[in-house]
Structure formats: structure tokens, C-alpha cells
Amino acid sequence: MSAQPGKRNLITDVAGIYVGQAQDDRIKTGVSVVVGDAPFTAGVHVMGGAPGTRETDLLAPDKLVEQVDALVLSGGSAFGLDAASGVADALRAEGRGFAVGDQRVPIVPGAILFDLLNGGQKDWDTNPYRSLGADALAARGEGFDLGSHGAGAGATTVNFKGGIGSASLVLPDGTTVGALVAVNALGSAVAGDGPNFWAAPFEIDDEFGGLGPAQDFGDTQTPRTKLGQHQATTIGIVASDAVLTQAQCKRLATAAHDGYARALVPSHTPMDGDLIFAASTGLHAAPDVSAQLAIGHAAAVCVSRAIARAVFEARPAIDDTLPCWAETFGHS
Image 1 (cartoon, rainbow, N blue to C red):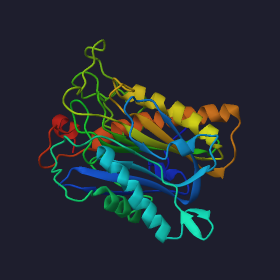
Image 2: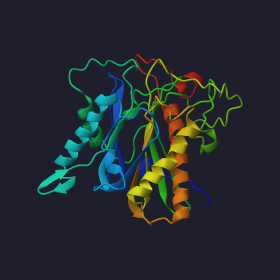
Image 3: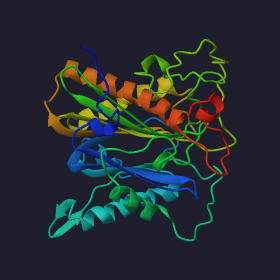
């Protein structure tokens, strides 16, 4: 029996995980939030040279707090870090957070991508990301939209609009793994001028068009990038219901970065802030070493598929600076 997607083919196939999203179409930006029924163990690994983060130091295995209340992906560059404050405020109002005396302090790490040069109106007087974070949390559920939504609302790649993508796998032993990725890459998700996705070898059930691998890979020695035009960063979250320690979550995040390299060319550049959070809800059995290998590989596969799905599902909007893959290649 081989691994297959969960019933939604989303990160929310991991039991106890929910996703909420909100966006402002005028600004062309948004926020995506992963939250659990209860606090969950988390780790992080950064591979890009230009990250923008909040509370990632707390996720190191030698730090005091091992679990978090939510993870936030946001547009907006440094302004977008305020999205996590909106999530923290809303969680505190729900009575959630790390107990300190009679106070509750929600632990909400986050990461941002740069979408300030994507054609949207950035003339705000008040930073919009705090309220977008709160709105995203309020919208949490098991189902959510892919493509031009949430943190992917204003995302781009070198040649097409990016977006938010997700995918899942259920392993033969019943462990579930999922990924959520906001694709705002410096490079490309397609080989040459497209339409074939770099992630094609990992596609399941025609989830991003069923076109198969490319026959013409273009110039792989000098790949195209949007260097000099825009800034970049692909940020993501992988999750599993397996019992994992904080150190094992970091190892899971590290393995999941293989998914970026398989689906985006180039990736992990000095101008990207490429980052992956990993989360464990601990509702399934603790894995042995061989099972950890399988979970790590599944996470990388889910990340690759999520990246392609993000670009595949993106749709056109007013004032776009780039076309969508779907409108270019005739997919509705």
C-alpha cells in the first residue's frame, strides 16, 4: 500500500490542525494561520538568505517553551509581522496561551514574504496586518481556498502569479503529513516557459494539471529570476500527527526543504527568505528512526505538490503585474 492524499488533500487532513485565511484585495496581500485544537510542538528551519520572522528563536530545541498556539504566514514584508500580534490578541481573548500567573501569553511564531511591489495599493495609514491576522484566525476551519488567497494573495514567481498551496499524504502506517506553502519565489515553478511544473514527478491525481514532466527544461545553467524587479520568499508549514519532539520537528522542517528545491528553480538563494515551520499534534504513535525518514520524505513531497498547486490555482485580479499560469495555458 502506497501513501495517498488525505480526504481533503490539505494540511488540515492532519487531525487537530485548522487553517484560517484573510486578504485585502485592494492591497493585494493577506495572511494564513495554522492553529490547533490545543498547543502543538513546533520547530523551524531557515534556508534563505533574507528571512523575516517572529519568535523563531523560541523554537530551538534548547529553549523553555516547546509548544505554540499558532503559526502565521503573512505578506507585507516587515509590516506583515504584525499579523501575529492580531492572532495573539484574539487567542488571548479566547483564554489561550502560555500560563504565567493569572496571565495567558499566546505563543505565535510567524514569517513574512515580500509582496510590496505587486501592483496593489500600499497607501495605508494604519498597518493592516494586525486586523488581517485576527480575521484569518476567526475564519479557521478544515477547508480553505488555494491560489490567490491568504498569504498567497499577492505572491509572485518570476513569470507567473504565485499563491497559497497545500497537499497531504497518509502513510501506510496511518500517519498523516501535510504542507501549507505561500509561494513568492525568486525563481520559477515551471520548466522553461512552462507549462510543465518542476514538481510533476510527485503529482497525484492530476492535482496540478496532469501534464507530466517537461521535455524542454530551458536553460538550467542560468535560471530565470526576478532579481532586480521584486523581492522574494517562499514560506511554509509542514505538519504531522506523529508524536515528535521539538528537535525532531526541526529535523522534519529541514527535510521538507527538499520540496522547495524540487519544485522551484532556483531556491534558497541569498535574496529569498525561504523558511519552513514544522508542527506535531502528537495524536499518532511516536515514530522510530525509519518512520521518521518516511515522514520527512512525505513532508518534502507534500511541499513540492503544494508549491505547484499554489501556482496552478492562482487566478487573475485587477492591477496584476504578472499573468496566471491558468489563464496562460487555458485551465479554468
